[in-house]
Image 1 (cartoon, rainbow, N blue to C red):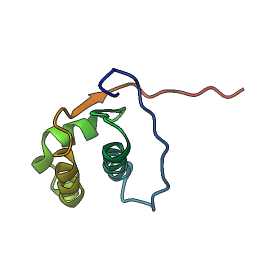
Image 2 (image 1 turned 90 degrees about the vertical axis):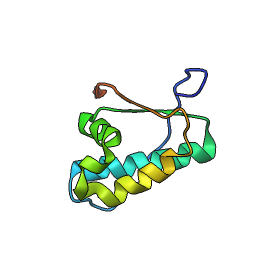
Image 3 (image 1 turned 90 degrees about the horizontal axis):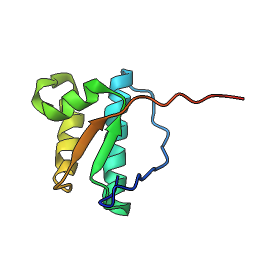
Length: 95
């Protein structure tokens, strides 16, 4: 969300296969943060992954993700009002 509480959506990118789904979510968060820094004033990031939120709160408690979390920590400096929140997964219905 931007400072006016308007939801900002952004496309995604194709990543190479990661070790786990959680690794992919960490990589996607970093990519989103880097792009929002360049293209928006967005400070809030939502996810359906509670583990990812826990990782952001306790960066050093996840040693197997240390390299990627260090990169997120570096990018996070650019977001003085950084907020990470949980939202339920959206289920799409096909017709």
